[in-house]
Image 1 (cartoon, helix red, strand yellow):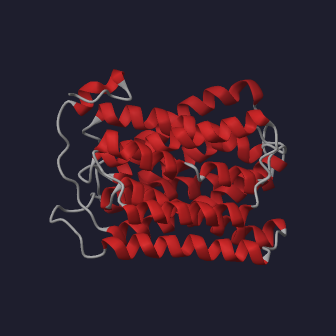
Image 2 (cartoon, rainbow, N blue to C red):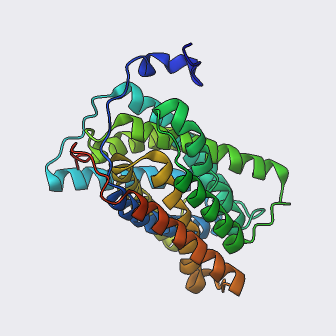
Image 3 (tube, rainbow, N blue to C red):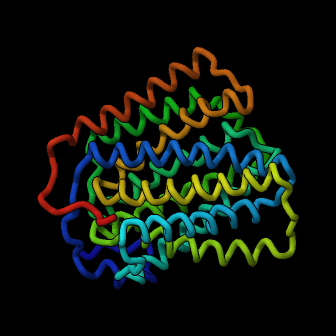
Length: 314
């Protein structure tokens, strides 16, 4: 019996059996960790922009505009093309990614939710990826990957100490944002290793920039020097992180790569020490160790199990 699609409107994408994709777990983990470093910088810059009374729409627009410029410069330096062959998948990935960005920057700028609460809710995304990667990608989640996800989630909850009794609508938005993020990750993996990561990010950033600029028009606030710097840092860090994350999903299975996203919680807390004056407790330190342990499990489990297919092009 043919399994029903979770997304009937894109059935034609799944009507062709996907070819086997390249797997290089260690490389995927390293690229994803690098992406999380930059995402942590982006989160802090976005919070600073929000405290400067810059509307979240402008913060998101700057992330996309500067991100597109960053991808363009990287492409020119490397001499790579900015075209994407699978435009159908790219449009769907861009739609999910833009929805993710809208929810992310809304929550990062909201004074009603702490940074720890926000990043914890975003960290639910790998759970959705693990659940969706089987029906959408045909990638079974192994017991070791499932254990790593559980260990990572335990570490996240310990590190962030979320107070999820915040405004219910914000909590619901955080969960929805994580779901959108998971779908964007799935489509990155679905596009395979042959697409240029720089081109994927460039086109996605242009799409997101158009949407966010339009949303910024009614609420536009001219930034001062300090908030302007925060906007630029948000864009550069976010755009660069997107390139690294895109490459990570070309190297390994979606569930395993996405679980490495939990390291972003630890990194955000570490970077917040000098900026926000948030010092971790012993419980938060223990949670950090759990998150790092899950990364080791994911990297060591698949080391050496690489396929002959080349990785995603730069």
